[in-house]
Every structure is written in structure tokens, then in C-alpha cells.
Length: 159
Image (cartoon, rainbow, N blue to C red; front, side, top):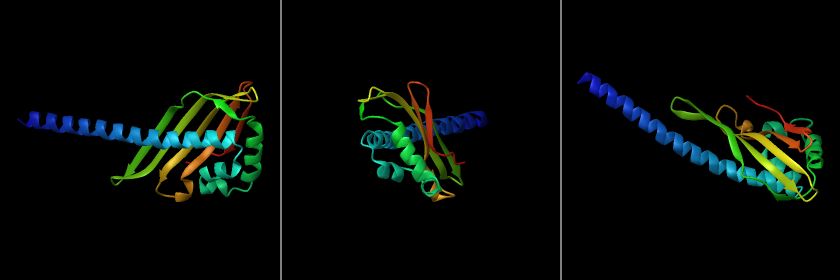
């Protein structure tokens, strides 16, 4: 009887974990989709101020961010005509005392074609939640790669 009870407990824990994981993935995908669309729109419309607001406060307040932001906008040429669906290469969540302490996403946007006949890939890292420092919430860095393998990184990694 004891073995049966232990097996039932493990089964319930496993099933609950799967359910929470699926919910988390759907929430992350919704946040990711909104952020991906905003990033694409900002580059396409050359809206550096809106793009800046997507970054976390820590990166926004770094001494060279505004200069790097202008350089990133110059690196990306043209208005976006099309792009393939983004694919998440990672997301993560950590808990402390049963409360979400950190939640992040790392989407990649492939085959971004512009009217300047350029093709790009954009990867970025963003914290949706960072309990220990709210200044880390938002995009921390974006890497833009063109069709000739030239890259530009805006922002920096925060751990």
C-alpha cells in the first residue's frame, strides 16, 4: 500500500509539473510574440525612441547606449517587407520560496527581408521578471546579423 501511495504522489507531482510548464510556455510565447513584433516595427519604422523603451532601465541608462542605439538603427537598412516566424531558442523560469524570481526569453527572428534588399536575423534576450532588480526587466541585448555575417550588438548580457 505504501508503494502505491508513493507512486500516486510522484504521478501527481509529474502531472502538475507538466501543466505548469505548458501554461508557462503559452505565457512566454505571448510575451515573446508581442516583443518580437515591437522590435520588428521599431527597426522597420526607424523608431529608436520606442526601441529604447523596450530595453531594461539598466541598459537604457548605460553611458554609451544612445550612441549604440543610433549605430544599430543605421546598421539595419530599410523597411521590413517580410520575416519568418520567430523561434524561441530558450526561455527560463526560476522560483524562490514558491514565487517566480526570474523569467526570461531568447527569441530568434529569421529571414527578415527589407526593401533595401537586405536580409537579417535578430536574436535578443529579455527578462519578463527579475525579482531582485526591477531595472533588469526588459530587453538586455539585441544581436543583428546581416546576410554577409556582419553583426551588431546593442546592449549587454545581465546575469
